[in-house]
Length: 99
Image 1 (cartoon, helix red, strand yellow):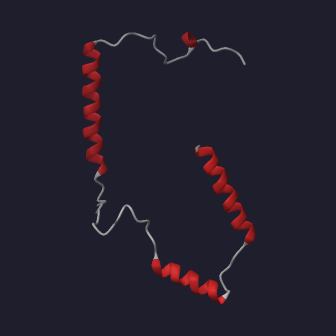
Image 2 (cartoon, helix red, strand yellow):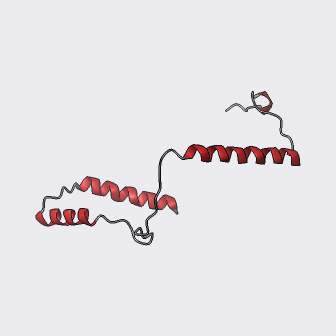
Image 3 (cartoon, one colour):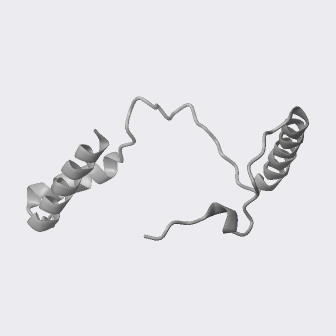
């Protein structure tokens, strides 16, 4: 692989030290960007956090669980062994990569 000479790249400025005045300009630009972004975020979307949501408990659709249990008892729930095996293998791989 050929080496790349940084000085020949267009748009790359030579490194320089940042002074106190530069820092103030950067902070001012960052603050202005944050204000502009905050103004754009309100697009009519409202987020409501209810007290009924318990972070310690996973969200469970009890009606869906009952439907699945009934289907399993009746023997008409579609079980595809290859899909189950693939999901188990994928879960194992994802757990191994997290470690």
